[in-house]
Image (cartoon, rainbow, N blue to C red):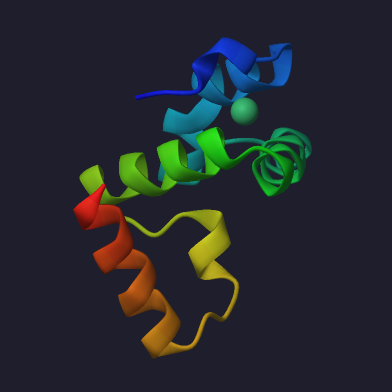
Length: 81
Ligand SMILES: [Zn+2]
């Protein structure tokens, strides 16, 4: 994975907490912090998307009422990368 040179403390926070985030066990304060960060950090957004696919779950981003077609294009995008 490229682009992690710009990794910030918030990226490390996401990495530390993504597992609980994906499994829905993260407390709401941390969930907000993770979601606020992935909106401004493509690396973490992609990372979380891939991680959630591996876990067979849907990441927070996709959970937000994405139309079926959008979900499909996001999935196929992630499969190509
Ligand atoms: Zn990040």
